[in-house]
Image 1 (cartoon, helix red, strand yellow):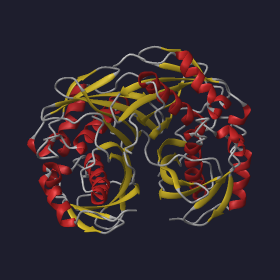
Image 2 (cartoon, chains in turn purple, red, cyan, yellow):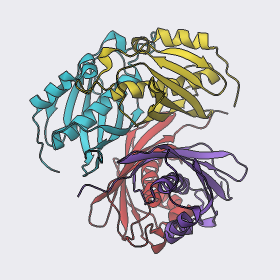
Image 3 (cartoon, one colour):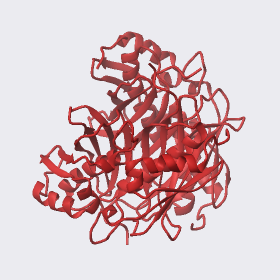
Image 4 (cartoon, one colour):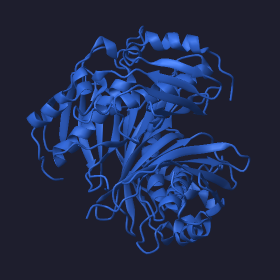
Length: 140
Length: 140
Length: 140
Length: 140
């Protein structure tokens, strides 16, 4: 596994410049060679079922994608467009901040795979998944 | 394929009661026995890359999930929690409203599969995917 | 969608030269601009559960992958390595030949997406899925 | 995580009774509370590309599915039909025996998620993936 080529501060700037990531209150909590932790600030508009007050699966999916993608960005120093993504939903998320941990599965020249897990404030696994990201410039 | 057991009006009420779906401006455009069309109202906070102004992949994923899920809801008359979901990203979505078309792949007693395609205002395929949904009450 | 650049006969040669595809008895049944049909010759070694005599899910997955991949090969004229694949299992397959229909979801310069459905001899949908394929030479 | 309720010996019997698993020469190499290791005996018929002599992706997918599924079987003591599966291909597998390591992602009452990684004889990661398995009897 190559070393990270971008600092957490630099990645945080990119995260904050992204309007939807900013809306989700995403913040890089930690970054080392193996993993990135990204926090999400819960907000009322993230609720799906109004009675059960679960967090919308689309928010959990977005968080999986961002955490996986930013771990790849830490290794390659450039944004890596998502090719495809899978999310598994393990437990309903009740109102509260969330945390995602992203890890590299395999860095490649053309495409790369990374995974992420989403935890609630009590540390329970809420969702997990993986994505494939484009790590080469499209053929011209 | 069984007949729909819920009207578009009833599904629209459920859609609107869902805070994140409401935030995305989701609206049922049409519903027949084979497919559901759901419109998304673009908003500035949906942007990912600030220069390219692409719509965030998390929004596209949420839209795939909702369109697939609501087609199942039309057939079974009850919300169907997402078990897992896959989204493929085909083209960057530039600012503008989107439309998703959801279809049943297979209705089952315990779990069911549905798919969805997301189109931009020019009718180009932006993303597509499929999900598995729980169509039975969890074992007590 | 571009025209096919390879004939069914040429694709059949490639299929037959592939040892595992030959073991599965794969044969191109038809090919047009929109879809490819590939037949599978059932054999006793494909059984998973010995009492129920269901066909192994790995065989169904392989068939989804090959049908999707060969539809892409028909369009680009070259093998396209699988990046990732998803298979949904809809119904147990009892002993008997199978047929898969592959279709393009999106042809891209670097990666492409295709889907496939697997049917049993009675025409029932047994499994379906989609994969992403590399349609550009790896970065040197 | 609950304790295993089946021994490796018992699981090995089930593995061997499964015709396609037997054809792949699958064998349980180890089993503890966290993971299962399953070996695959390479055979000439597993080759895809005849020149490059890579192992067919369908074989790698089948191995991911079996390793994930058998880790679930170790926890619940019963076969768990695959609902859906994803495989990511990381590297071409050259001729030689393979090993898969299966792990639980989340055990649930109705459906459960497990993952698996496939390694070649040199210990390189060849493929990885995850599946959702039915861990409840279908609704009657």
